[in-house]
Amino acid sequence: MGLFSKPIKTLDDLFVHTLQDIYYAENRITKALPKMIEKTTDPQLRQGFELHLQETRNQIVRLEKVFQMHGQPVKAVTCAAMDGILEEAEEIMGDVADNEVLDAAMLASAQAVEHYEITRYGTLIAFARQLGRADCAAVLEENLAEEKATDKKLTAIAEGKVNRMAA
Image 1: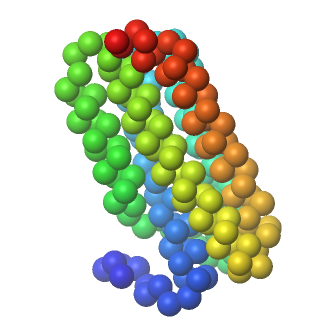
Image 2 (image 1 turned 180 degrees about the vertical axis):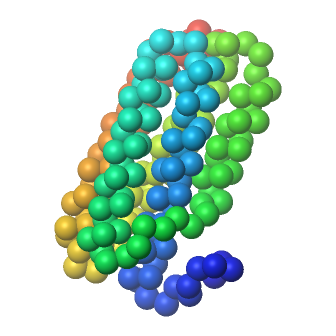
């Protein structure tokens, strides 16, 4: 249990805590993506990051809806995993001098973010269903579908050009 969070005793408590975790993560991503957009030299990758920034903002709105639907205040709890993924991305971005290698590094970091989000949304959907909250699950499924689509787009960009250019 964290210093400012309540104990997790039930699946419902765990659902709310995980919802707060992904809410923090999505908000943190909206702060990191503009830096990545600015440093990206590949136009297709830049466009992908810009689109995902918009999607992430919409996902935050959906998460706020789930909090409301579940009768919980909108609240974030620190997500150490997302902080770690993004800190590593910033460190790598600072270490890479070649623009094409930098694009590949940022793309790889973005996919690490996507994979984390996919696991969190999948877990939240399973919890929501178990709790009899098909309404919450349906909203969370929209976010999961976008995350999976973004991951596929990033893979296509990596395999189509970015990794080849970095080599």
